[in-house]
Length: 192
Image (tube, rainbow, N blue to C red):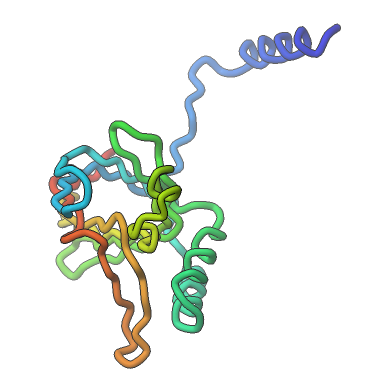
């Protein structure tokens, strides 16, 4: 029996024994949908819908490792450390694109009963942007903060091209946005 015939037989057998009501397991701990408005001055002014899905939250150890890397080394080392985090914590996608992995995310409860979510990852770069070595390639991170009220609705800011630095004198993390302002996230809602 040829390899091709064996493969077809194996697939047919799997289809017969797979339960008819089986669904892909949803591993998400939180699913958000947001209306994003790009007024950053980079590219065209536009709006789109974003799906942001968190499958887990970053551990205290992951947070400390990333912070130590930034403080002791630099943003390039931070980018490499971020890329090594496995498994991802979630993904973000527009209604016109494939998802992009999110490598770091933390959620805090607020005193008002809401939630504050911060996430960061490397950012997608287009072929032309990398090929032409545009100035924007120095802004390698995507960083977002979302605030949800107690009813699961809120807003946020998404910086799609950011530099991350640690100011040793002030002992603070500084973000430099490539655009005039971050992308505004409005009508952020928790999806069931």
